[in-house]
Length: 146
Ligand code: F42
Image (cartoon, rainbow, N blue to C red; front, top):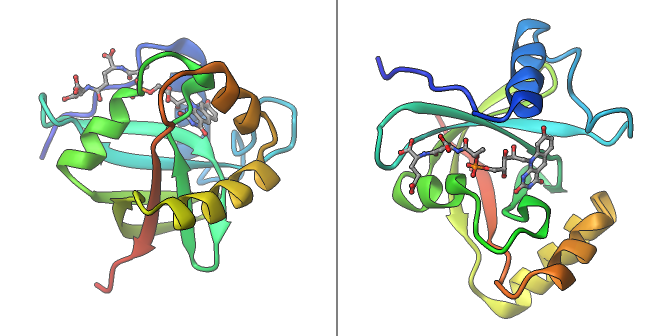
């Protein structure tokens, strides 16, 4: 079994710990905003290690939209490269855990549609988009039949 390497960022690591330890009943919002957060477990593309990343919860029917905004930072978050290399993830939405497969959305019209959903769920995404020169990566996660 691959080793779990926690995030080097304290607030992210602590949120992951609380979210998992509570079985999804705590640590499931962005700080005290009340806005829901999901937990994505994925595989490091260089280390092969297990990585866990909290993201805002954006839904498109049964699918989830994963937005690589990283607060509008100039570079993509590392997890984007991990999903490009290995699209299989586990996604926790509060008390529910799903095996899912992701793909990056490149089609402009579909990206625009999903972006509207993302901004409706978390308005600051639009500020992040304006802040950075890069195109913010958008992934869709879909349930895998087991
Ligand atoms: N980030 C977002 O991009 N979008 C969101 O909607 C979002 C919401 C959110 C809500 C709550 C919360 O606590 C955090 C939230 N974040 C959101 C921040 C998010 O959880 C990540 O911390 C952020 O996106 C940065 O992702 P990152 O993958 O760059 O993480 C950094 C801190 C990290 O863990 N870096 C590791 C390190 O050691 O520096 C490397 C991790 C890694 O995946 N390494 C790869 C490997 O092989 O293991 C190699 C990667 C490579 O290609 O070099």
